[in-house]
Image 1 (tube, helix red, strand yellow):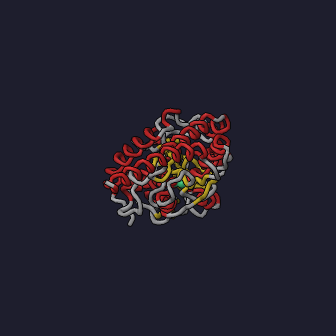
Image 2 (image 1 turned 120 degrees about the vertical axis):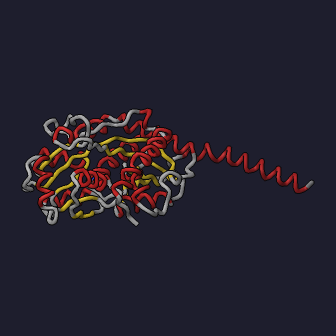
Image 3 (image 1 turned 90 degrees about the vertical axis):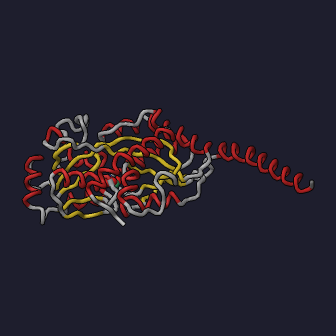
Length: 328
Ligand code: ASP
C-alpha cells in the first residue's frame, strides 16, 4: 500500500513539475544568447543567409543569435555538433540541401539526418550559378563543355566537400557531360571564391548569395543559373536549359533545426521568430539583391521542413546512387 501511495505521489510530483517547468521555461526562453551553427566557413553563401536571419531573429527574440562557423567534411561536422548539443534551444543549425544529400552520400554519419534533429522551418531556396575565374577561356556553356572535355586532366573544380551543394552541382555537371575533373575541396565556398578570384581554381557552381556581386562586378565569368526560369537580379544570365544543359536544375533550399528533444514550446517560439525574420524588410531586400526570396510563412514551420527534408532525402538517394559517389 505504502509503495503504491509513494508511486502515485512521485507521478503527481513529476506531472506538476512538468506542468510548471515547461511553460515557465518557454516564457523565459531565450534567457541567454543563442548559437546558430553554419556548417561552412565564414564569408560564404550559407553564412550570408544565416547572418541575415540571425540578426532579424535577434531583434525578435530580444537576445543575440550568434553565428558560429563549423566548416569541414561537406557540412557534416557542423551538423554533428548540433545533433549532439543539449536540446535546450540554445544551439541551432542552419543547413541547406546538403542535410538531405549527405544522408546518402555518407556511408556512415555520426547522426541520423531524419531522426536527430527537431525541424524549425524552411528559410529560402537559392539558385546556383555555374561560374569560372575571369580569364578561363570558354565564353559560354557550349565552349565550357567542350573545353572541360578536352582538358579534363588539367581543369579544376572547387567545392565545399562531399555533401555540399557545390559538390552536388559539380557531380551533376560532370555526369551530364560524362567527364570527371579534379575537385578541390574547401571548408566552404567563401574561401573557394577567394581562390577563384585569385585564379587558383578554374570553375565552380555556387549559390547566387555568393556569386551575384562578383558576377555584377565583372570579377568572375558566369555560364548559367541552375533554375527553370531566369533570376531577376541576374537577368542576362541564361538558365542551364537555355545555355544547352537541359534537365539540369538545382535549388539550394535552407532549413533551420534544433537538436532532437528540444521542448515543443521552444521550437514553436523559434519558428515564430524565423517567420518574423522572413517578413523583415531588410532580409527581403538583401535576399532580392542576392537572387532569392524568403520562404512563405506557412513553409517556415516544423511540419513543412520535416516533410521537405524527407522528400529531398528520397529524391536525391537514387541520383547519388546512380552517380556512385560515396564518402566514408
Ligand atoms: N555554398 C557552399 C556549398 O557548396 C557552402 C557554403 O560555403 O556556404 O554548399
